[in-house]
Length: 298
Image (cartoon, one colour):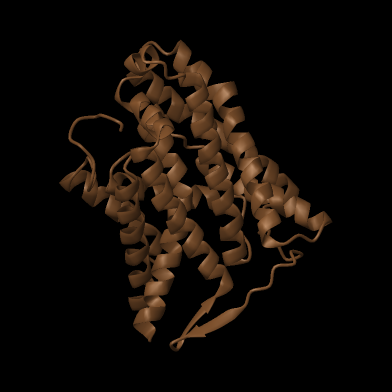
């Protein structure tokens, strides 16, 4: 039964990582934007939910919707105010990628600063929410309603997104931007509109992950987004940039490795796991498990 409990913990943690990293991977893989402000969007969206719950007791669904809306709005604002102007003014694609990384790092500091000032850098959570955690015994395994929600939402959205990108017209149009933006524009793909839609989707997923993580851990800090950002980066590299199926593999390996470290040690090395995995994959297979040797973001 202990084995089943560990499997449940791995699946739940991987689901949280998947929700966080999914939007980041898509934006990086299709629009060549490695958004290092994604972690601050995750945190600030959850923080907006916290501010609302302080005033009005709300159920989990309402808090999640608020966080998703806040994440989508913040992500779109960053795209319009910073990322799009950088891409237009950059001399070439390589220069644009470097400038986008630096711009993302700079943007990430602003939401963190606001949250730090408001909370005095203390953890915040949804203690006033009306949501109540309930536990069920399934074959001797104890599982909560919150874990069920995280598992269903996380893996469900991951599978749905993979199908959407492979089968739908909009998904194919978004993927075409990663292959050749100029040719896709000539074929009628509105790059600006698709970029805004992609950023809004990524921000909404970050907000969803932020709210569910806050409920799951009972609280997070203004710096929590930075920690999960590094883990998501490792999972994306492991699976292959832009590959949703690869990302699912990446988050599972990462969550499994971290859980094993906690089970068989005092847990002191758990935060080093992501860096270790990232180093190994960069040495052995830089393109990731399902990535391509060519630098083609599809």
